[in-house]
Length: 448
Image 1 (cartoon, helix red, strand yellow):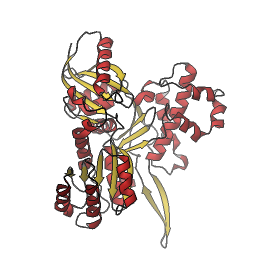
Image 2 (image 1 turned 90 degrees about the vertical axis):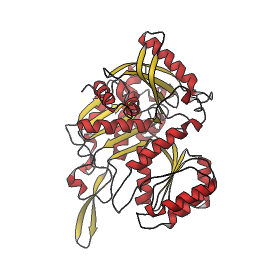
Image 3 (image 1 turned 120 degrees about the vertical axis):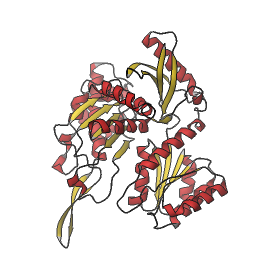
Image 4 (image 1 turned 90 degrees about the horizontal axis):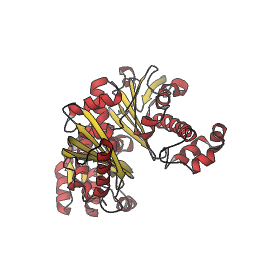
């Protein structure tokens, strides 16, 4: 059988391969296999997923034109971020990295100390991001940090996204130490202005160029002849694509280990007028303690075991015997309960709020954080929010969670959609080459 495109999602434990035909904008089928990073060869798991795909669609052979991939294997995209002021350039750089699909292992503000440099070496990041200084503003901190990082000779790519005046000096520093450098526009060029998109794109390009150096990933290029981007970054690409079509939205992905929230919205004019610091249009937050399998005990701890037992008297047994995919009706109900807590907690951490500042002139109303008041659509992806019976009901509870009405939540009447084929990550990477076909297939998966 001939297909146009195969897309592999190489996860930390499972590898999935999805098959697509572009002419008819058709999702053909899916196969799964284990991720074989620990075996030192990801292509073993890829081949097993391909065999499963053949079996599922009833063919003996599969030929393809393009093979693309997303990856969160080998620890995902580990990054450290170093800026000048924590609430300004360091935060802007962090937003760019998260939006690209990175796992942020360290954020620093100001000049790097010896202990910071030691920690960078221990983390062994895939990419390091250096920012700092408004354009034509402070220069010395970013230059100092760039030189200290270059001296480490870690042989990992460094992205410089700081004061534009430092470009030539930073380039000379990295040439002197023979280290790879990408220079991009400042993530925080002027006060109250974020410019994260150029950095986000360069992070994904750097990841694609260097992913084959990660443990177990050396052979991935033997099969993949197109882009490889971080899986969370691929979901964000898909969310940005869909926003162009249907308007302001958020995507929630509840997994076994983490819960990701992606929002793509400029917010309302009313809130923007009182916002005290800028937010990116496309924002991602990841909650590493909110997962419904590996990290389920963390959710139980947050709720309180005694409170959980009031709803499930057999809670301890359900926790001890939990499975990656719940089987019995009781297990499904328990995972739905945990998923609801994960969703509401993750959105609560993602969303901004209104607060009051009191000064000599009296009370002033300000807003800070991400404004979701213009969001019209909530989309569920990931295993839990594409498969659980109460998935839509869980997501519809989000606007009702606005305790005290001070949070910048979506308003009542929100529309909920489900990524029924569970292919948003694959379509994100597909959209980098075939945007029109990716959008058509996505709308089919969402039922719109």
